Length: 317
Image 1 (cartoon, rainbow, N blue to C red):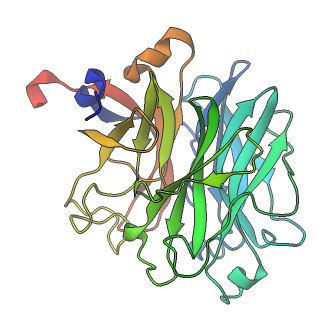
Image 2 (tube, helix red, strand yellow; image 1 turned 30 degrees about the vertical axis):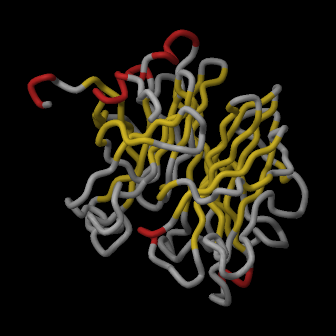
């Protein structure tokens, strides 16, 4: 069994008050990048007339902050294409800074999806010279898409989280099955490439863990993961009729090889993005913080909130 960093066993989540983080029809926040004195957050915005109509008419926005607490109004970062596989909606951004450019992994849906003829969706890659864009698509084809019918990811690959680990790029993605539409039964897969632009090769042992609307990021010698689902299938739900189901436990996970993840500490999460600190602060989990989706009722009225990783109060353990 892998050795888990002790501090990950002693951490919990603390919700932090902010000003003007996106609310209403905004959700699926990206990771947060810090560049030249500014924090950048990308997120999905639905059309107000059809706010929860499964991705059609979505676009990706970008908002900024100087301190991580007070946020400016969002601006368009990536719109649906004029034609092709992602012309009906784009969503779930994950943005990576590599060699002076910014690369955005995203989910896209086409006309057949918007018209209800298919539920299949896949991932694209766009790039820009600045974090606010404009982001331009890298080619006309997806960077990752569904597998043949009968596989664990034959319906969709989406919700990408990319990380550079052990001298190659790892892309984690959510896979779903045509015969299993339940959002609480989705799994996470892994693909790798020598360069961030690919081509990406799937890990033969996929899937690696349960997950949905998740985050993966580098921590010390390994990787941390918030999977977005309860740890054990059948013990509490996240994407049922009541998103606030009190049963079951979610965890912060750790891996030393990028494949095998072990639970560390209970930590609630739904659709999160993490801000990685700079320098020596990267060795301390309490210097990391993130954003995630919350709800004001059982399902809708979604909004984005900030949370910090804090050491547990000894009196509450």
